[in-house]
Amino acid sequence: VRCQHSPPLRALQASAVLRRASDEHKKEPLTSSSQQHFDSPPAGHQPEEEPQGPHSSYTGQGGQESEDYESEEQLQHRILTAALEFVPEHGWTAEAIAEGAKTLGLSVAAAGMFHSDGSELILHFVSECNTKLSKLLEKEQKLVQLGEAEKKPIDEFLRHAVEARLRMLIPYIEKWPQALSVLLLPRNIPSSLNLLTSMIDDIWHYAGDQSTDFNWYTRRAVLTGIYNTTELVMMQDSSPDFEDTWRFLENRVADAMTMSNTASQVQSTGEAVVQGLMGAAVTVSNAETSRAVR
Amino acid sequence: VWVCRCHCRVLLSRTAGRLRARRGLATGPETHFGFQTVTEEERREKIYRVFESVAKKYDVMNDSMTLGIHRVWKDILMHKMNPSPGTLLLDVAGGTGDIAFRFINYVCSVRERQLQRKLKHHQNLSWQEIFESYQKDKFNSLGDSQVVVCDINREMLKVGKQKAQHLGYCEGLSWVLGNAEELPFDNDKFDVYTIAFGIRNVTRIDLALQEAYRVLKPGGRFLCLEFSHVSNPLLSRLYDLYSFQVIPVLGEVIAGDWKSYQYLVESIRRFPPQEELKAMIEDAGFFKVDYENLNFGVVAIHSGFKL
Image (tube, rainbow over all chains, first blue to last red; front, side, top):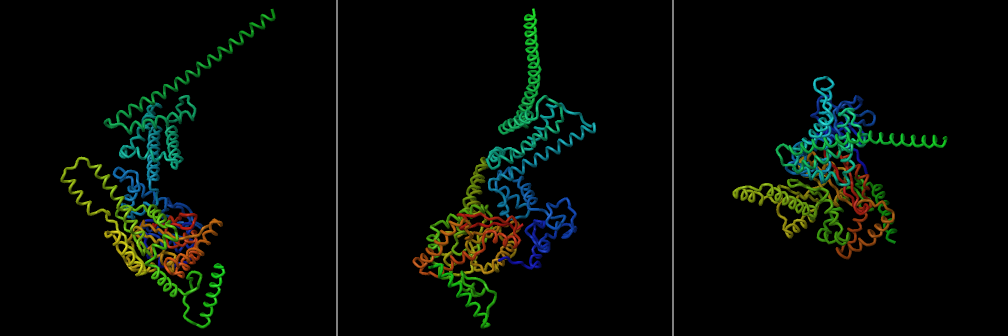
């Protein structure tokens, strides 16, 4: 038995957190409007208007979307971001998420929205780091385009990008091994692999098309290998400011460069050899025919 | 034969209802009591009497009817809740305290692990500091968690309190007499609201859900453990057979009360199925409402958040 309660009853409830977007569940626009949070800026609730504000998440039916409602996903993002500050103490766990929810004024039970092994928190963190890296590389690219900075040679660029990305792990370095193991759970592998490959692609994109004679897959695989091995070295590094890690990174990138040169050398040598063989074959066949003719 | 009996009773009660209306007797809004049709007031009274009479044998009957599986269901509910120390739980229709005791056990063990981890961190404290931390934590084994058990039925609460004493639970427990449709608590008080095998007995479920929304803090969680509908047709037939043939007999043999257990199995059939209950919970204002079937739908856990 489904009951429609009178909207005025619900209007009294000020949801302290979620500035709710009207969604598929709510049939009455009035019901959802009375549930809104009244702290929001005076732009307020416009049930019939269409303009898609920067914060609106998705369109309800009939354009019942209001500009400054946030969705559950956005709230979850906020909680996870707030939870990051408690990770050094509690690890990547539901406890950290509970503490994060507390700082937003929510009950600790809100951590129940997420998995109890902290997967979402880790994936959220990785995704945020990748976004930060993209922004950083984009900024630097703009500087180069404006002529305010010099374009880096490819190996220096790769080193710089990987180091910048790995440095973002430093505040959480103690608990990062735990995070890595959670990311390797079968359930999380699709998402974590996705994040990893898109980050690597990003780096290559901003590296520009300084050709190194690799094809696209090889480039991806090489940089993924460099990144993963450097990350593992970083876990065990106790040198001041992780100098050993950066030196390891330098060596690996240098190796990759040499490998590319060797590959192109091998290729041209290979071509030369093939040509030589072809030439020899032609000569031999000519010699045969001329002998036959004679 | 028994199925016939049930149908007959339905027919009889329906005519009785109509007769009542024709005679102009006080009718009030009509609802169901098992397969009978009664007014809301009558329903509340009848249910009160049912639980008054079963209170003492409630736990024994639970064990025999569900072959002890109800303990597993309640454990799963607790794991799903995953409460951290400092959580304030309201257990409505919590009668004999099963959920409350499990909550206390869970929170205590989490707290112990927390303390152990804290100790491992602080490897170079002075003896004075260690002593002080022991003092502080010894008197805080629950980590400030609390559970309030609320029930409409005095007898059930009495049994619960006796059980608590017997099992040695004293800290962090309170027992309150109250109606789920009109809770005697202020707004925004609790972190988690649970109702285990109780919402079926509430006459106005929508009111209970609204009250749940009211007393929960923002971010708080609503959890409902209840018998639900089995969709698999073969299992459903077996389940019906078991419910209508075995359970009332057990009720008579063990508790000496056939009618109450007849009411029990009928009320399960009358309760809305999973999707409908989910819609009702969303109507009350909860978000991220979801349910988990246990034992193919014999029991379902519904969860929602006040956001």
